[in-house]
Structure formats: C-alpha cells, structure tokens
Image (cartoon, rainbow, N blue to C red; front, side):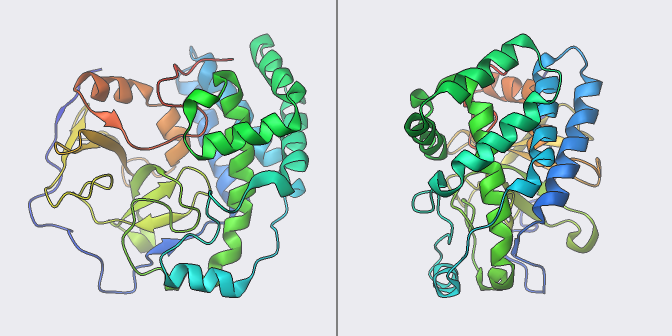
Length: 311
C-alpha cells in the first residue's frame, strides 16, 4: 500500500469549537456499542479471510458481547464526578480508578465466553497462560497496559487484558451520562478516563461533519476540531495521507511532532467502528511508518511495535 498527500480541508476551515448545541462529549451505551463492533469485525474478518489475526479479533469481540450481562458498573460519587469534569479531570481516571474490584469476575466471564467458541490452538494456549498467571500479576499487567508500559507485557496476553479492561470501563462510563455537559474544552485524552484515542471519526446524522475522538478504553467520544494535531496541539494544520482521496480511512499526519492519528469518515462507510476498522487497516499504519510518522493512537488489542498475529 502506498500513501500520498490528500488535501481534504482548506486552510481556516473547521478550526474552532462549535458554537451551537453540538455535544462535546458522548458516552455510548456499552451493549449496543459492543454488539455493533463485533458485527463490524465479523465483516472485516470475512473481507480479509486470509488473516487469522482478524478472525481471532472477531472471536474476542463476540466474547465481549456474550459476557456483558456479568459486568456491573460500580457505584459513583456524583460530587466527585461533577468536580472532576469542572476541573477538567477524568472521573474514572486510569491512574486512580483501578480494575481490582471486578477483575476476577469480568476476566473469568470473558475467558468462558471465548472458550465456548472454536479457537485456534495458539489462541487457546495463550488464553490458558493468562488464566494460569497469578492474580497479582494479572492486575500488574492490566495496570501496565493502562499506563502504556508495553515492555512490561507479554505480547500474547495483551488482547485478553485489553478486552477485559474495555468491558470494565465501557460499562462504567455510561454512569456519567448526566454530567457530560460539564465537559467544555478540548482534550487530547479521554475526558472520562484519561486514555488515548484509538482514532477519530467524522460522524453523520445529528453530529454530521463533526470530528470525534474515540476512546481506546471506554469508547467515549469527544469533540476535536479538524485539521489540527491532537498529539502536540501545534497551531499548524496537519496533512492527510491515504491510499486515495475517496478512502474512508486517512492518516492525519503532523509535520511538527511526526505523529499521526487515523481519521475515519462515516459518510463513506456508515457501519465503521473505530477499534475494528483500526485493526483491519494495519497496512495503512505500515505505510505511514514508512513515511516517517509514528502512531499516537492506541488499540488495546495490541501494543505498539507488536506485529498483530494470532497468539
């Protein structure tokens, strides 16, 4: 795959925050999101039927759907949530709201849902290794993944740990629905949990043409002005690199920090899901890397530098 510069927006367009009632923060309904994500991953895996990695991702996402009923949100302190948003702090920060409380329940549910499927031997072996890992080490690895400490993680454990964390945070995120209007500003990290985005999506429908960052952990969506780097916040406009002008996925590339975040256009692919479509577009990552750009988004199914493959 080759990439080339694609001018998708003219200087001065869509540079500021909206001055209408466009929501600046949207927390999604976890069940609906996980079901749509799993369905999208099934389609993408079928389109690339020679990829055992995508087939595995489809199975893992279906397992997330199958165990949703066993994941419960924890009680919240509304005053803490309110004050967190007012002071521009994530109420369920990955540095303070930690997974110990439900880890055993949720990881066990995910593993059982996955084992109910027909798994490749390598996948089953990797899952068994994680299951046999001491609980304290599982928690340590989960915290390392949240902190992007990739060197502390066995690569074949990452998808299972990441999928469990997504369940925990996505279910919890919905409990702040009544407070989302308190989020007023721009942010390169998720206002709900403080995680990095996986990608950004230009939406259709009620949020038509507005660009939202999609959280890699809790799936919350927050508004971000287009044509501006979300990594270094340089005032200079970013460039677009993609296969063609009509491609639904582009790399939004910054010449200042040499970072990129994928930009996805829902109008060109209505059923896209940021996490699933990111996993299925590794060729774009490789092409952008060859151009000297580094990925700034995260996908909790793999770590940066890890070659996606079945474990």
